[in-house]
Image (cartoon, rainbow, N blue to C red; front, side):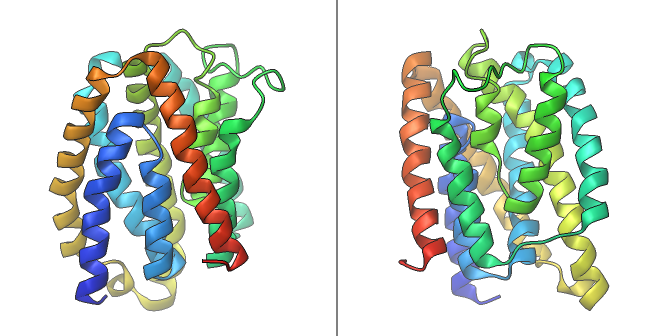
Length: 248
């Protein structure tokens, strides 16, 4: 990996961790798009997963008193079923497909609320979220906009939404790392994995961005939080779709 690519990745870690610290998502979409442009898909997925585990793990720690652990346990059950299916199918997308999936995932924020009665607090919906979100996160790299659909109708506060989503994403990204590491190690050995120093350097930047984003989150209203998140993710999705079509 070139020094310039590493520098771009580290700056992106700081910026996108700040964005995710505010909105609980969106930063991951941007980060995955940047990585996909700089390194092979498998490497991008592993780096993205590792950094997102740090970012979401730290965010979970910061807002730990707001986590709904009952929802997380139910989510983990659905995630386990998805893991079994993914490893059985063993399909992995190329770069253009990843951009397409990222764009489509982002546009899920416009899914009509009346079309699906999604509420992660309702019976069996946390399990369903675990299955579909884990599946999408593993092959596309991100799943925040889809996960958000399960939270928009809840009576949870913005802090509870960010905290609970963060802990579920720690699990989702851990599975993603395992899924994409297997073919890399099988083909070229452990030395083909992303350099350890890059992940080590990314850790404090991710934590700093998350901390600064959390300070902004404290100053936002629940209404502005949800409105701002929707338009930010839409703009990111549009860029990803243009990349998939070859216009950028």
